[in-house]
Length: 357
Image (cartoon, rainbow, N blue to C red; front, side, top):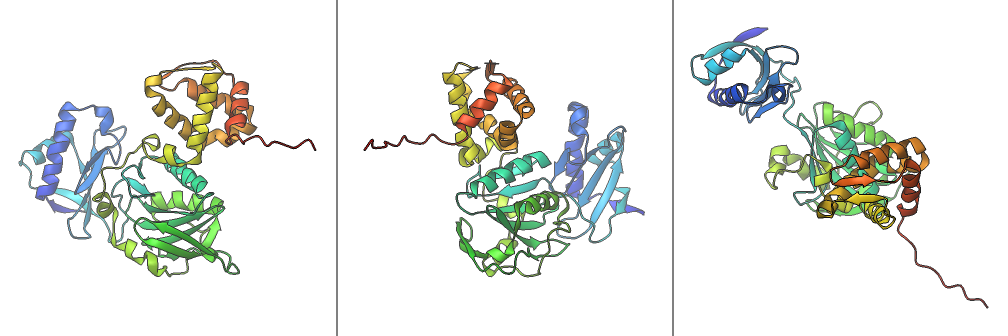
């Protein structure tokens, strides 16, 4: 139901920014619920119309307002000509997006990802899980609504710990007969021990993590028992803003994060690109070869394993590499690339001398 909404100073400042972008910016960049952002809220042009819809979040309160404005109303608010408008007061507990989801896996600026799309999140999660084959790793995930979760990955399993969510907090329930313990050292927590009985299969955990990033809940396939390991409790005191205050703005592109350097697919990409160069099957701009390898790493995370088994996927991968910035030409066919993928997937082994007698 519409109610009278008195324009606060922070929302007026927001509208001054919006007015400038409406008058001088690219209109196509104004569409969508996250196109325009400010500390007090976010919003954008409703696709297919001429109305802007904003969500305003009252500072220090739970109050939330949905506000629809025409362009002229935006200018009038920005200029101080309007002090009051009609708006919809959202019910208490209504989930509101507070920004992009955030995934953190280390202490450095590049050890994090601002999640723009579900496919980018899948790439980062798959990379971290691949990394956990060698040693367990801990990642932290903030949803678009600021719900918080910790995931301890230890291939082939994942333990999930929801620190804050309206849907409920707690640890995932796995196989109660397991008595082993997963040990690791985290840059924030220090030494961590979690029970393997908290682990669920990666297939289930992957889908639950993607759902959590968007909705703040894990879904029906994961059961929570309502308790949190003591060592992880302190992490619940840090929301997304507190985490971001400790580092530079994380990249929104997986290729610009530390994933190409840390994930095992990074070494695979290095071997693959070098092999194609040695066989003269590719022409590259060598000034940006590191950036090309980073992009190839992301492609291998997405479809490298599938391309080994599928000629069709290998052909698609070849086309993606050929269209990549810095690739002058790719002479390898899908079949050639498939062979190269198989030869470079694992690092070469040292030959063993076998005595003749």
